[in-house]
Image (tube, rainbow, N blue to C red; front, side):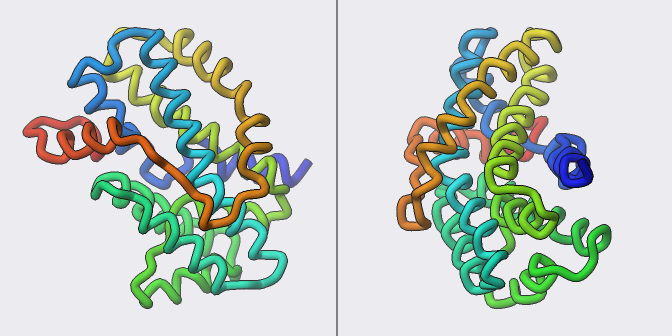
Length: 225
């Protein structure tokens, strides 16, 4: 029961890591007409969660598994893998800022940990990233990797849907219906990536990268990405 409460606390979409500042690419997708109603929003959210599984999700599992071995270098390599695969500047900024905030919050709330040690080692030029920090934190809190992966996927979807309520004409029940449908894929996504290693990480989505590049130079923006 205690582990479940810890999962709910640190996996909560309102946990103060700055997720509300990001749309995970949705703002640009709306501006360019890629997303304009409930159906296109559902397809977009599913694309985001699939990419979250095959890229960041693999790194999250690597970070989680590194805790059992006390392998700080493997955690650093997972962070590096995430950072190098963020092609556009805004997605890199999102991953690093949220990762740093989570690590700092963990240090204050939880105390001494491998994640706190990793913050101190980030001066080597490899920043702490959100998915790896989440995996490490949950492992240290005694939360299993499947639940950690599920929380990460839930967060990716809820970030987009929270932004959607401010960007297009959908209501809260539309958003919850989409979240319910997308969540049904989490177990399949986990099975697809649980045997992957860092070299297998993939996030091929050129359309999203183009939208992110356009968003970076937009004159008016509600979100940071």
